[in-house]
Length: 302
Ligand code: PRT
Ligand code: ZN
Image: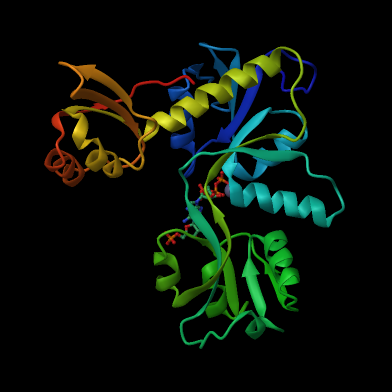
């Protein structure tokens, strides 16, 4: 197997080998119709259904693999992508990757957290303080934007414990449930970045066979992302009830209306992107919907 950047016809996608984003990334790609032959070293998976191969790596390596042209796409946290982008910018190098799609999993935020005992009055309070983080570029750019002169203490892990160890006064780290902060007697006071897993790709467009493949993958991914939380809702109603029914479907795409049994009775079919709870179905029924049916959506192609 060669991982050179020589011109090639196959696409390569880098995903996390293990960790929070590994399984959902694979599931999303499988929902796009991709399948692979596992290799023995479990680092490279040869694409079988389509000429799209997987590279299983550490998430921190993904932006660099795209920047070097070793991979065409990567599924990585926005936090990692922006941090490496910021790092390149602060070193005077140009941006070489871009976020192509937000993928709706791996949600978290990069936040500043201070000891619970602090009386938080605002960013000015941070002047002269030591802030522990694994995201120095994002933190520096936030400090610069807020004109704050503070010390950035770069750590490679266990950031939340730094204040208790006396290594820093506060932290800048990823938060999802907030339980880790609470366990370390810290409280979040500012959000630097809202993050989730994203599909990253090169800043420049693809050429040749890979351009067509990239387009196909993006089209299928858009379909997979749309169907993931979508349901098809079907029911019948009197035409006169439409005015009460439609406001109950704010998340529905342009409903299809068919006439049944003469002009007054309609069959309605709508793709809904929100949660179709029992409560909502009961509200629809009260507003005149009959024979309500909710169906899962398998695939979608715009
Ligand atoms: O081995 P490799 O380098 O690939 O993995 P990793 O250990 O660097 O990454 P991993 O698997 O922990 O996270 C991958 C990505 O998941 C991150 O880059 C984020 O985009 C996303 N993500 C979502 C998170 C979290 N939620 C999260 N809670 N990444 C880390 N955390 C950590 C956080 O750093 C803190 O220590 O979880 C703790 C806080 O969690 P709560 O729930 O207590 O707030
Ligand atoms: Zn990592």
